[in-house]
Image 1: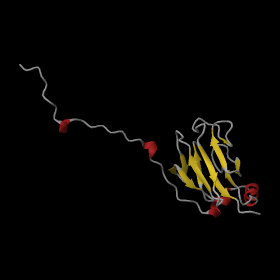
Image 2: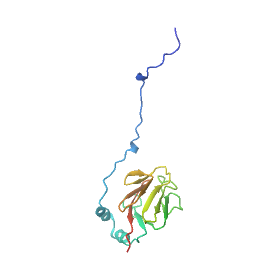
Image 3: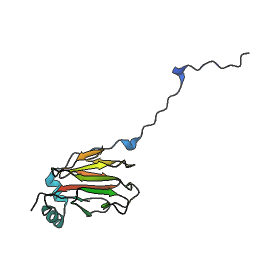
Image 4: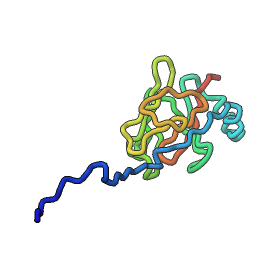
Length: 153
């Protein structure tokens, strides 16, 4: 009797695969600007219309902190769970130093992920860095914020 095991036939092994459904996100169609402005209150529309040319604003239109407004008027704006962040988002889904928004010499604003655990999303797509345009939805953790660029008075 031979105690040694014969090598197992590789074609007869079971193969198990894990699919992470959380990685599959539905990507909504972009909303027309008229529809986005219709979601704003009268006061929010007035504030957005008065934004200076070198500034922008993120507004929470729906979800946690609905109605919160964050003015972006410096060359660099930090977003995170750290209380010293320019945009402080107090939730465990947000990294301490989650993202930042940078203003270029051409007055364009760009969002950059800072190596956050949950990632930064622009219009439901995960990004590392991207230019922002009016109507874009920025998702940081569970917060969904809509971007508005100042057009000047």
